[in-house]
Amino acid sequence: MEFISFGALQGDSFIVKSNSTNILIDGGMPSTYGQIREHLDHNGIDAIFITHVDYDHLGGIFNLVNDEELDLTSYQLFMNHPEFPSEYQGEEVGFKHGHSLKGVLEQRGKSFNQVTTNQELTFGNINVVVLSPDEVTVELLYESWESNIIYEDGILKYKKQQTQSGDIINKSSLILLLSCNGSNILMLGDSHAESACTSIKNRGYSAESPLPLNLLKLSHHGSSHNTNEELLALVDCTNYYISTNGGRYNHPDAETIQLLQERAAELGTSFTIYLNYDIEDDIRQRCNFPTSNLLFIEQCSLEYS
Image (cartoon, rainbow, N blue to C red):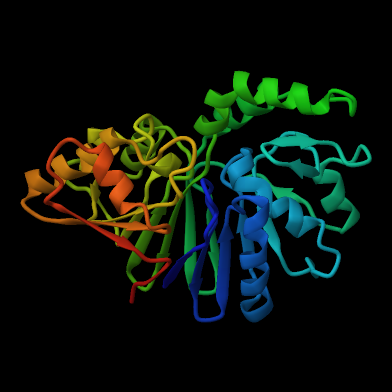
């Protein structure tokens, strides 16, 4: 199983593939689509998962669904989405001729499939288990979202609603466990640490019997609000991935790096922190504590047999 991270600036966009099976998880920023399209041209795609409705995970998807040269016939698309505009404008979203993203897909004969806890999907020899969100959280997302935005002030009202609903947006993020030939990758999207912990424990894992992982994609670009001690204790993992260029939010947070350092030291081992941008120096400058148990590597493609 191969894990590929696209350069998505401060966003997320990944391919997980095995043999001829390719799964796209998130679309990053609009500029990310060039990398996505190049991969699609050479490898095709079997499924697309959008973890949640946030601009740094959706930008490339706007370009994908509006790419009339791209045949979407064979694609399976998964996202829990409210009615959502179809045009991306920087960090803002506005309507394009009044059509929603859902409407554009319907015009092309496609739609998003809703996904909730404990669904299991198989693509080729890759098994995908949805660990979160549950149906209650998805319903709360729908209830919290403004869908009747008019064109004249659509951008303003969308940004306001995103700010007000940011908590439920991230809480409703998909958590995906991908498995292939005995290898496991956990993709946390922008999920809350509490949601991730609950999801893992609901699968029968604990600190005494942790979830074995080859790679864990840390939530929310390494934000301190999305990783905690309990989460790191619930997984048996020495390889972590952080997707960000640092951006204006200066991710990853020093608090997250300190948690990783302390956990690795507690176990008497080293953790490898993979990055998709050369930001190691920036990270170390923010950390006023030892990081001797952490190895930072900029690497966009990882393989697990």
